[in-house]
Image (cartoon, rainbow, N blue to C red; front, side, top):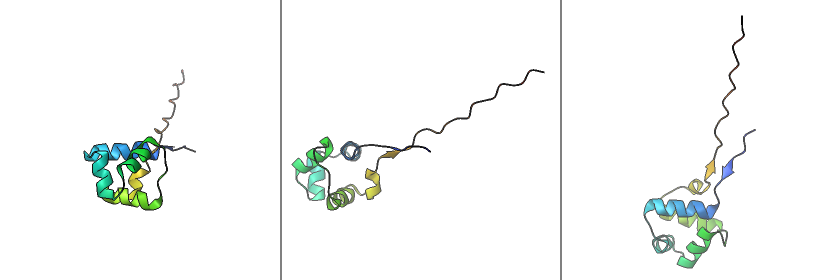
Length: 86
């Protein structure tokens, strides 16, 4: 069974914000949050409420699933068998 690695919410939020080319202030304004809230979320100091997650997703024009940051491990490649000697 493969184990999924997840990116912490704050790291994922910063990545998405940077990708949008926004400052923390830009995101805070668009999401109706304080800049201190965005900063604390990105540093992992606080966990977001569901309403905060939805406000951030809406501000960034994304679905809330964008914050999951789930990364599947690379698939295992089957080992090749050595050819039999005749």
